[in-house]
Length: 163
Image (cartoon, rainbow, N blue to C red; front, side, top):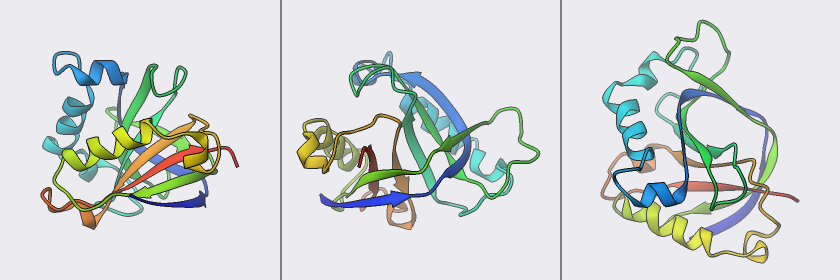
């Protein structure tokens, strides 16, 4: 994976969430992320989000960490918005505060293997590998046009760090 350090401004998102942890995600009987993603796409929820800033660019955010990557967190899937008005009741909002990130760009590969492999590498990284300590405020995957072919996906993973 390629890494670069970057800073992003505030990001306002609308989507749906699930509360989970990585241990639960290993077991299909307790996993919530897959069903949340399926619900989001099978019900075309992105098309119901008002004021979409970049239609078709999906954010999958890990936030509200209980501790670190071993504790509970909130998983969010949705899109960035220009303005928050007339929000349907099925959605929640998420604002990611400005922060620094270690941005990783994956090699091209098939889903979900490319994603699983990237996170397994990230979980083994040290603060030195990230360029600074992780802050566990908000980390996210960004799915754009490079993720449209599920057999040839490239995606960016942003890990929040304290610079």
